[in-house]
Length: 217
Image (tube, rainbow, N blue to C red; front, side):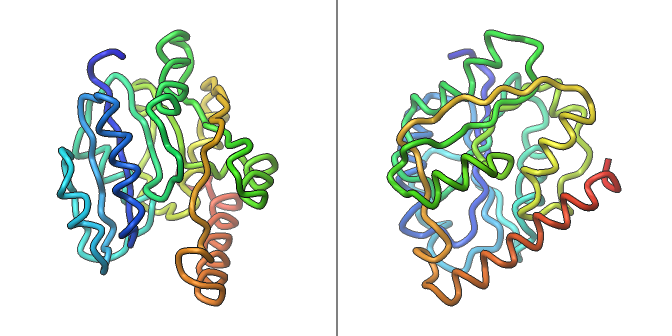
């Protein structure tokens, strides 16, 4: 693995889940790991503090796009970037390498988008198959990071914007398969009712990004 690799991990109320992610990420040997706590009200921060990471804290929940934006502005310069969700299950250092290696081997690539397969949750695997544009596991080259406008508006639509913007700028993207990787669903984390409401809010923000991403270019 080359030097100058930064991992950004946005997190909001991921107590009991973020530690497993940080176990794998900190074992990877990246130059810098940054957790952006987006106004959590549980023990997410306390769990993150047990690991050798930089920690950014938002006083209130501003959304995933704003969290990633804060991380980018905090680090500013890195040859390679990995965006990793804080609620993954079965994350390994091999998954991180699959996101990073295509960027190292093909310098024209601006981004990789990891695709789940056979992760053990049929609903998650199907969503990844048909809506892979929503996947938060991404690798980015510095030249693509430098082209990005602010992501603060995007909330859960940030992945849609990253993909739409790459196509708009004719920046090549690769789609490595991340075998065995999955994540906790909203319903598993919050219960059926609250999880469903949270999912509907996520879809609303994604639809906004699909309809209005060009306003933010």
